[in-house]
Image 1 (cartoon, helix red, strand yellow):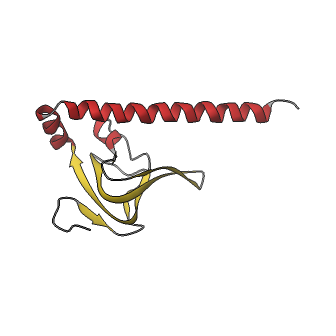
Image 2: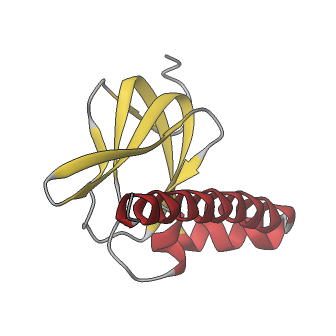
Image 3: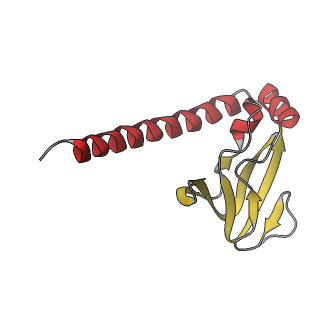
Length: 130
C-alpha cells in the first residue's frame, strides 16, 4: 500500500462509516476494496463491493440524514475523505464531476429499482395460492 498519497489507510475489517451515524462527507476508494452492508432486524445484508475509483457516503453530503449503511475495509484499503465544501469547490472547477456523480447515483437507483421489482415479484409468487 502506497504510504505517500492522500487518504487514510484502513486495516482488514476496520469500519469506515457506521449505519446510523451522522455524516457530512463522502469517501473515494483509492486502493483495496470495501464492502457496504445494511443491518435490518438483526440481519446484515451486503449491498455491494467497492474498489478503486468507487465512492460512497455521498447521500450525507446532499441530505442531512444519518449514514444508511456500514462500510468496512476488506483487506487493507486507502480511502480519501471529501467534505461538502471541497466537493462543491471541485465541482465548480470541473462540472463534469457532478455529471459523473449523478451518473453513478442513477445507476445505483436503477439497480435498486430492479431489486425491488424482483423482490416484490418473489413475494407475490409466495403469496399466490398453489
